[in-house]
Amino acid sequence: MKIKTKKRKYRLRPQIKLALVLIAVFMLLIITGIKRGKKISFWRQSGLDARSKQNLTINAVPVGSCTAEFDGIAYIQLDTIKEHIDPDVYYNKDEGRVIITTYDEVYRLDSDAATKNGESIELNFSVYNDSGKVYLPLEVVERIYGYKSMHFEETGITALYTSGTWAKTAKNTKLYSAAKKSRHFGRVEKDTRILIYEETDDHYLAQIADNSDMGGFVGYIPKDKIYSSGTADTAPEAAEKEVWQPDGRINLVFDQISNAAGASVTMSDGAPTGVNVLCPTWFSFKDTGGEVINKANADYVEWAHDNGIHVWGLVTDNFETAVSHAVLSDDKTREYAIKQLIAYADMYSLDGINIDFEAVPKDDSAAWVQFLRELAPLCHEHGLTLSCDLFVPKMWSMYYNRQAVGEIVDYVIVMGYDEHYRGSDSAGSVASMDWSLSAVKDTLNAGVPKEKLILGVPFYTRIWTECTNGELESSAYGMDEAYKLLEMNNADFVFDEKTGQNYAEYTDSEGRHRCWLEDEQSVQKRAALVGEYDIAGIGAWKLRMEKDGIFEIIDEEINKPK
Image (cartoon, rainbow, N blue to C red):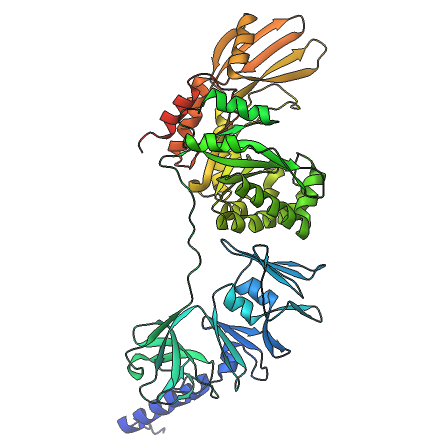
């Protein structure tokens, strides 16, 4: 006979349950290391090296061990400046030269000399190369870039900052790693000097500014632990950009001038209606040495100014890759060329300089941008507008770096012509409407701001001859000249929907002659793109190839109310 036993149920008392829960929570806090108020290492959290005396912070952001001291002068690694302050700082390894550009200043720093906008300046430092690491003195960052600095001997931290508010701690507190009272870097005594960078709801992001064992540490301090008043400390603002703009849109025309007589012809013809910028082709290079050939005319400039027209002198690279490479790729040749251009601009009271370098080698892409970067500040210092002519964006010309150019210069003129040119494999329009549209849209998409973009349009066309022997020939004509020649040969005129232009052709013993005309209709359509895409204006190549009344059409179209 089996005897059944009754199982006894055991129940934990409430006090024991609570104790077990508290023990579990306590153990979890210990295991995870997030116990309230836990002190942690600033060095480990920031990534700085506690053993180094070369640590750097920039505007409260820990950067790394990248400072040094040579002959009693504080230095910063050039790579650090390039990564965190100025990505465009230029270094010539062969010459040991550093070039820094701002809106209106160009600094050339060598190991034994320095210039600002071409003038020698006294600096108590030099570019320093320490076993392949290039350094610039802290004075450069302060003087050129407008930073201020603090150095804390005990921690070895150098702090760079552009703005902040000075204050002191009102009570003993802690410097927290985040804007909540969790982990902290250590105790902060009452009346400790701090620099405040920003604020959250309850805390300030601050940097300890006393030379203590926490000097230069960055973290959060509760607002109620800070004196309410503080003194702002802000670096000087950079020079304000003042780009010339006409009352309406820019209405520019290029004026191809090969000698002094060309200037006389322009003046005798009278000022074109609505044009506010003339761009005469006055400057080129003698050879690869960078010497500028000057064909400027003071009377022309005075006449233009009397008629309310600005003059931007055009400089070309002679359409020669050897010249372009020589001028762009060598620091001293660039400087020599720029000095001449600025001198001529001052001599003739020009209002601007137009850069038309159409033969830049692909390998000189960086040098091309650097040339503009060094030219722009001097133009701005002398009150000159800097413009640049660029091709319609295509894969082969991407190395012209339109985005960088658009950031540097005041205006970009996209040369919206030569869709078909003398060496083309087939006859076609110099600039179909699709080509003009692509010139605008693709240049904007490449990074040129709309307020800087000028659409280049042709005042010329080409008459093509598909010869009986199979060859293709063409010649360029002005608007009236082309029309008269076609009419004289009893050409058939029709409107070509595909190109958006009037088209004409005729056949004779030489072969079939074809032409996509530039006229009032094509010009009006292109000018309408200026308002449609709200760009800066229009620029035509070239003066004296237009029909009567063309300038009036452009002026009316580009200045229509928005």
